[in-house]
Image 1 (cartoon, rainbow, N blue to C red):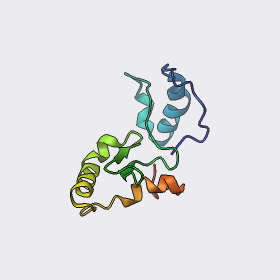
Image 2: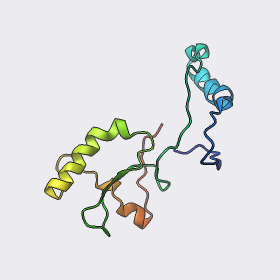
Image 3: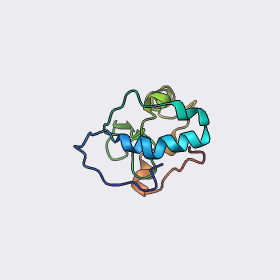
Image 4: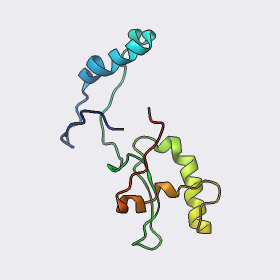
Length: 124
């Protein structure tokens, strides 16, 4: 989910904002888990983050308007975590014309076209 005060940023600005860690993230972690008071940042980076703005979930499946074109994008940082399952589901869809073991239909592109988000019920 996006931050409550999501702000516009310059897409060419890759400056790491260490103040966000020091002033917002670290105090919240340390409040919940006191052991986090002893941790600090050792490495950091800034870069583009791919996600769909409708519901922040991946877009997986066929493009109805373009034959033999399949979407598999917008994972918002979860791509590596979800890649095995999505790869299996998408390969079944391409080979058999249907999902067989993992039904990924709720992540289809048609929800984007309809403007109907697929909202997760258990997001941290």
